[in-house]
Length: 220
Image (tube, rainbow, N blue to C red):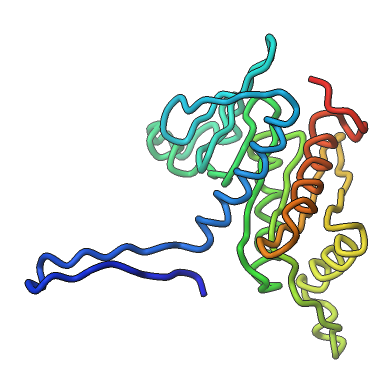
């Protein structure tokens, strides 16, 4: 299910109030919770500065986490037919979670649909270009994998995505891709029904690799 609704209703229909829970939004919050939990284990603290912005800090080190906001500091779109800045601003991507000063973005996909995850794969690559990221991360639950049956299906882009997820599953749920220019892309499997300690271990492995370029000790 993509969402759920609950609420209450009084005798007068116009007083009814309903609430809608979007599971994909909860999944983003779940991923953010794991990220902040790992950072706190490493001695970092955070505070909310404004809507969609958290400051994360330690002794002299500070960076910002953005939630559904464009990263700052790099403008790939210079102009749109001499239009004003509002149009350019509306065209910017908005990664689910990003670490602005570290040039890192996480795109969360609460789906096991291979076509949807394929679109997510290309979206992360687009973010890497658009915001000049050092790394992009595609986060999702573990999808069900199947073997392509015919030659036409084998040419589909989803086959490549399946191959990535198959390898990520065999690598403990975290897979790194090296890109041109020293940039990187990760596929990380986070299933809310998995063991909590295992999920935290996986997020910690990602954080260590992102912040230290693959070293085993987080040192900022």
